[in-house]
Each structure stands twice: as C-alpha cells, then as structure tokens.
Image (cartoon, rainbow, N blue to C red; front, top):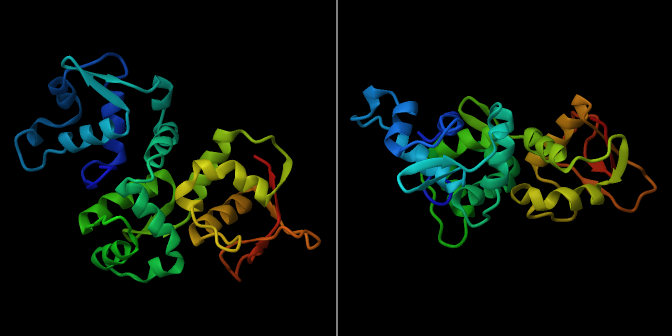
Length: 260
C-alpha cells in the first residue's frame, strides 16, 4: 500500500478498525478477518481484508508471529481517528523511497499546476512525469493515495480531487514538538524544528519560498488563531508564502507566534 502499489480498498477507516480489533488480545489472521470483513465479502471479488492487512503490516502497526497477529502500537493511539492519524503520519512519511511519499512530494511541489486536471488519469500522468528513480504511478494508485492524503492532512478533498492544504499536517507536527506557548520564533527557527518531520512538504525550499499546500496550511493556522504569522520590515531573514493577494498575509513573513 505505501511502499509500492497503493490499493483503493485499504482506506484509513478500515486500517483503524483492524487495529482496534486487536486492542484486547492477539488473534489469528482468520479470526481477525472475521472481525473486520463482512461474511458476504469473504468469498467474493469484493474482499478487502488482504490489502488492509498488508497496509497495517507495512506501517508496522501489527505483527504476525506463530499464527497470531498482535498490535505494535499503544492502545492510547486508538482512542480516535485523530490520535491514530498522528501515529500513522510518523510512519507513512518516514520512508522517502516509498511510492506514497514520492507521490505526496510531487503533488505538493506542483503548486497551482495540480489544480488544472479534471480527471484522475490526467493527474496520474502528470505525477508520473515528476517521479524519479523509475517509479511508476497508475490511476488506481492516485485514487488510493487521495484518501490517505486527505486523512493525513496534506490536502482537502473537494469533488473527489485533493486541494493542497497542509493545515492538519502542520498542526499535528506543532502538537508533537510541543512548542512553548506564546513564544515568538523566526520562520527559520520554525522550519529547522519541523523540517525533519515534514520532509514531503519541505524537501525543496527554493529562495525561502513555500509551496502552495504548506502556505495554505500556515494561513489557515493563522486564521484559526493557532499561530500568528508576522512580518517585520527590518528583518533580513524573509520567507515567502505562495502568493495569495486575497489574504491579509499575501506572501512575506519573518516571524511566527505559537499561540494554541
């Protein structure tokens, strides 16, 4: 699911349900399947358990040993889908050689170009042109990718397409780092802190300019009161959001106040 081909039936909700089924005790693979896959799917072409199971294995959420499947993450990570998302993000974006990571990075690096496609086929062809190392991406990969991209917070699904906006992803990272509240940082200090956890969104910073998705995320965090973006004219360390003339912060920023 994450390392190579991405599967449309291995959606976040099903991976979460599979992990929740193991909260109380380990189960055999068959017993686990019976918990998460309706009987009417078990012998039909609609079976999704194998791909969901594979996704959980690839993310190191579960382990199978001596005929028993056990949970590898703490039960507190399964309190709700939001807590689960934070754990998944650490794993899904950790392998920068995976197809999922490479597609995510190419998507975020495309900026406004990604908005010009009216079907998945054209979008997959475009992403394919941006991938290196001989990787290939097909339409089904992109269909599967968009569910996880939206869930993990690098975009928002609208009419079945993903609009670049890293609000959720950046907010999760801010919470993970636990910045001191009401402390002002330079943008350089902020990026130095979060870049190791956000390689897909900050892997290519040209002339201190952020991509559209990261910029949209910062603006939404500013609008929600989670942070306050600032521009100090006398600073010689200026960074640039992807330009948006309609927003109060059109581009240049130098500092950020972590509020929430």
